[in-house]
Image 1 (cartoon, rainbow, N blue to C red):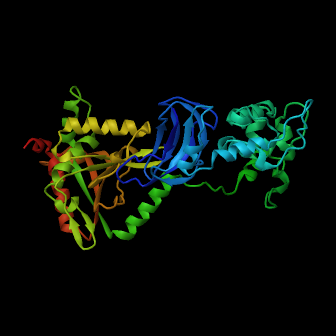
Image 2 (cartoon, rainbow, N blue to C red):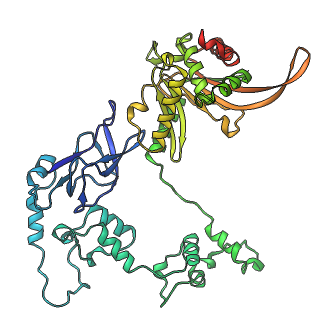
Length: 451
């Protein structure tokens, strides 16, 4: 059964997405429910499943393109099915163009085909993914015979060509060539390329004059000099969003950071006492405590629109979580009316799905306050940047075993410093201090949570 695959709408506020990767090439078989392509928004990347089984007949949106939600990105249909109407419906080229292109292809004559005189580029039928792989690997795809529908060149054709024409090179030579930026295709040699072959064509002649003559023969030094320089790396979509939002936050909010040290000994006892029932972390406990305190300090839980404070009678707690390619703020909804166990369970599930790239936009939106914990990295104190449109964020630092004086005696206590960054438009210093004092009361006497 044929269908038009579209850019999905993954959340209420999503208006567009970037198609970052096709898992199938044109002409390849697709099974319903199989991962077909990946979509990146300003907050996450999602794998999108095929709606129907068939052949990926047409790719309408190339990798890297950004389009509005519900815009057609591809067509899945049976191999012999007429998709001309689907092409017109989706705004793609007419199926007649494909027929004409095939009719204009010269018939192969009997005997050996002259591969040294390829036809014009516009007569070569190749899938977008196959073309991308070919260009990346400097492969002249005009010399390759396609095995896809209508003799189209597909991904497996390019990969087979690369494998059959792969340069024979030793592992050491391959690594050295990469380090010295040597193009292995320019080394003309019968047999395996070795380390000495790479060194012969490397840029050792360009060693700066400041290097002493006696060091010229020092190969490790030469290799390090050749590798010195600059490298430009494009930001990922997630990193670009983080950069823009941090810049926006700093320009919008006049902020002050307030630090307060608290005795976490009793909270530690509570945490340890619960381990036989369910595993709870300090972050889980602080989510519960801060959610409780925010109800008493509505300005810390508000947002600002123009000259108006938008006060919320609910707490949606955002928790910053570091992933390999950036930072996400996971949002646990209605924390002020949920128990500790439910908060712990939901937070663990959010973190698990974040690592598996299975989050929805609703998991990342609607936060009213954010907690970010760098204590596990040994940070003493820091000034977190507010997650807009919120007006405050709480930084959690490392726990330190500290000698303190109690009743004239020195005892060891577990102390922690919390750092509150607040928007001074909404939160004055005294208000911020009282908020931290109340958090401190709960941290040092967690039994208050049951009151």
